[in-house]
Each structure stands twice: as C-alpha cells, then as structure tokens.
Amino acid sequence: MTTNTMKHERQDTASPTACVLLIGNELLSGKTQDSNLQYLGSKLAELGVRLAEARVLPDDKDVIVATLNDCRKQFDYVFTTGGIGPTHDDITSQCIAAAFGRELILDEEAVARLRRGSFDLNEARLKMARVPDGATLIDNPLSNAPGFRVENVFVLAGIPSVARAMFETIAAELAVGTPIHSRNVDVFLREGDIAEPLERIAAQYPEIEIGSYPFSRAGRFGANLVVRGTDVRQLEQALAQIVTTMTELGDESSVGTPSNLNQSSD
Image (cartoon, rainbow, N blue to C red; front, side):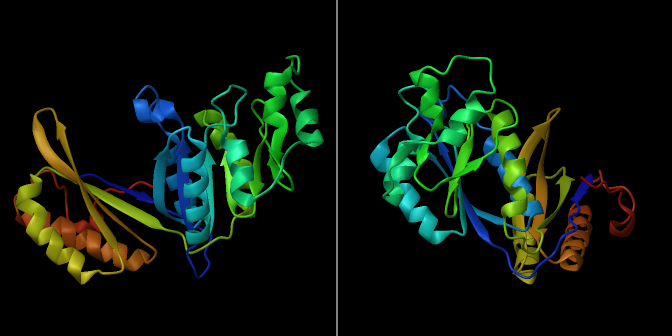
C-alpha cells in the first residue's frame, strides 16, 4: 500500500456548500476534456467549502437559467466555468443576467481591462465586457477579460489556466469552513473481495466519507481507498483500520504497520 495526505491550516466551525456548473456543448460532445472540476474541488476542500454537486450543461439559455436559479438557492456558492468568450455560442453572461432579472450592460471597467491587451476592441471582444448590472468583476491576470460575481454566483472562464487564475483572485472572499482533509491508500486487492469489510468499516465512521476507486496497473487489479472528513483523528483511525484489514485479507504491498507507513503532504 502507498499513502498520501493533504494538510490544511485554516479552521472554522461550519462547512459552506458549493456547486459547480460546467457549461459548454464541447464538454458534452467529448471534444473537450474538463479539468476545472478537479481543480475547484481540491481548492474548495482546502478552504473548508464542501463541493456537494457538479453539473455539465449545454449552451442552452433555458437550461442554464433554470439550473442556475435552482442551484443558487440550494448552495452557499455556485461556480460556473465556460461561455464568457466572444463567440455566438458564449451565452453564459446573458443567462446569468436573465436568471437574476438584471440588464446585461457594457461595463466600463471591464472595457478598460480589455484595453490592456494588444488586440483591437471589436464588437466580438467587447462582448466580454458585458456583464449583469451590478456585478462585481473578477480579475483575470492572464488575458484581461474578466469574470464576474453576482451575489453567490461566481462566473469563471472555461480555459483551465484562466479559470484557475481567476479563482485565486477570489479565494479570499469565500467564507472559510472547517478544512476537509483527505487520506488515501492503494490496495492491490479486487473490489469484490474488499467490499464487505470496507462497508463494515464505513459503518463505524458515519462522519467520514470512505470511497473505493478501482484501477489496473501492470496487469494487477486494485483500488484506491479514500477517506475524507473534517476530523483528522478519526481519519487516521479509519485509515489504520483499513490498512490492518486489507493486510489481513492478503494485500502484500503494505510496508510496516499502520503507525509507520510512509506519508507525504500536498
């Protein structure tokens, strides 16, 4: 077995919830592989924000507006990625405006930011300066075209590097909850053989999420077992019990005992 850990420093008492809406026909067609969800899930966990749901939406105004209005009522934060570029199928901004019942306006500060670039501001590029009335701009350190925030909805670019740069500028604005920690261990046993004992362990730790994710490496089948939660002590206890149980089931890749397994921190 091999183990990894993530450590987080800031703490509070509650865990705000979030939903991510990934917008774009290219995602649904399979032409584009999303990486924004993985990044946002990891970063939100570090902040103690629990990513409770994610949805992939087409470039369809009715679908986007209805979904957004549903999600912004259910979750503390909603993050959207994609659809704020200059082309005809970039409709996220107008959908956000419609969902909040606001006018889509040409924001002069957004225009000023776009002027920092080396391109002429034609009508297509000016589209990226149109935001819902009253929106707060989100800085874009990479390409100047801003994202924006309306109440609890944060609108980010779809390009992963730009979405990440945008998120870094707003992370400090989010309410910080109790950090969500994660531990994981690789077990070279088939899921069918570990399912029942793993279920018994999960029942002992109702406050912890325990997941099993199968893999095949060099012809060997196994599973990455992940424990997640806010109580580090319980996570360590659950992980130790998992390691002991899996070793008893015949996993021969374990080195040492649960108390001295090598660990690294992200």
